[in-house]
Image (tube, rainbow over all chains, first blue to last red; front, side):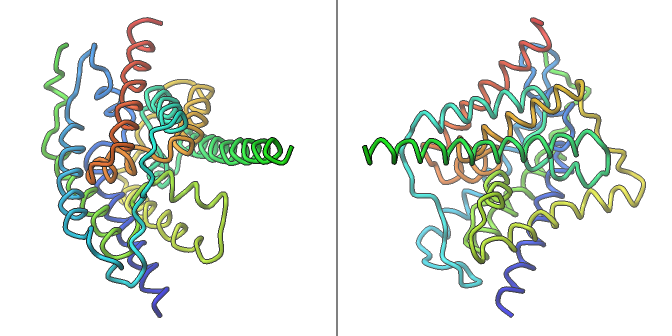
Length: 151
Length: 142
């Protein structure tokens, strides 16, 4: 029963999140690109999306940060890593370049799949290849490090 | 800098943002998870026992509102700009970069910044920087 209620919770929350992406304009690449076009005809609307999202999420985080477990019983899984490294910076710079090229980030990419047209499917397929490529890159890097240590 | 007032839609943008924040808050409070789409999707590619079904339920939920829009005939699908090659290159960069940087607009930009994580603030500044720069190059230089 518990696993069912947890999955129903995740499903409904994802519906809410997707609705927010649709209403805000985040799912429209044109809107996102106009927000990123500081030196053209700039459309600052999405600042309000970020601001609204941040405000509500911050209240929730600071209200729940002392909890040991979530309401449905799972442990609170908040990242504890605080290291600023080349992967964080390099990865984020690459992600931003792809975002600026397309106006699409991972959430809106998947939401756009639901509108059943070709280009979003191509984008999501390429995104999954990129993600799998990073897994591979990571494993090769890890095995090389291990080999050096072994030697 | 000139502001395009005819496209300016602060109210839907704010309302959408509040729903996005409410979803992030709910996932944390109910399931103890950070709402980061690249992490939730990317985690499917290195599966661990008992860690797959919730990710699939999340993706299924994302698809419901756009499918309803499509069925009601109001969702034509926003146009993806650029050629198919540009779309594929952008998808590769978004997938690889968001996994390498451990997050995207939702995980770092909303959830991480909301808890004042230095890593997420740095990541958000980095992807905003190359986002602005790429659009500048594509629209005003090339």
